[in-house]
Image (cartoon, rainbow, N blue to C red; front, top):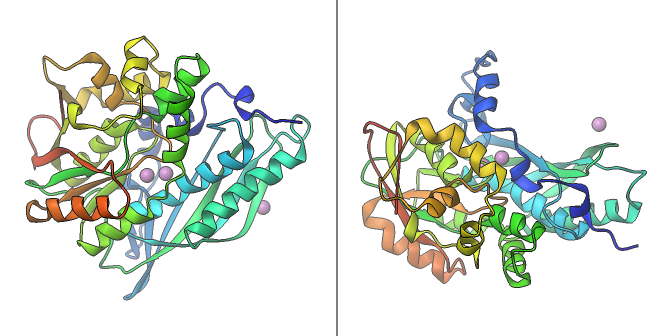
Length: 346
Ligand code: CO
Ligand code: CO
Ligand code: CO
């Protein structure tokens, strides 16, 4: 029996996240744990938590899981794992061990599909050098999969979303548009080639980008996932207390993402993200509406957004290109905090 996981979901991948606004509302009433060893906690909404073990070692912890983004169970496992591990890379950490998190409808799908999802996850984890040493399953529809990941980092070498400084330049390592392409696939508005391209990009580990960040001693970064490029840029601006300007025409897009959104296919998650960030964002008067919505498109397993000091920009870009991240490009800049945290221009 050929399984099509997309038959079981309305919105898959990071598009299925709770809206960032609702999440902040809930988190703000939670008491924050107090412990001097918490180097990165919930308060800065960073990609992962960091806990100091001793002067030379801290642990980086994160978890991500979501409903299917594609039809094939094996490929879904690969993408979910790459996405989960990404948050460790975004902090500059080295991912080491992980646990499987699985929700699977045992009465609705053959067990082979379960095995294929885990196998995809296992192989992506192996590529990242991560050992999966356990997990947990709940019988649930639709299926959901991801990892809880632990990484190592030196306590002085943490890359955070609070590390962006005025005068720096923003580099993005993957094109944007996975949410639009996947929604377009559902409505038969995206062609096969674009879907293939999106799937390929989601399977690329952010390891290479993280290696380059470490090599160039980058301090500020995040990865682009469910809140979209603008949502994560806003979180970075807030945590760093700076303003960020995004130049939308410079952002590389996957295939026909622009055409698809122009024809009216705007994923619901993009409106949710816009709703969250709108108050703290200045949109230039001539901003192209399609580009505006692209800024808020929820990405699954998106690229790294790194804040690079002026003198290093060319060398970092060159290195990213050399190592195969050929879409890496400058997409904006960081300034001292102005009226708004985020500025979006054509
Ligand atoms: Co993240
Ligand atoms: Co995450
Ligand atoms: Co258990």
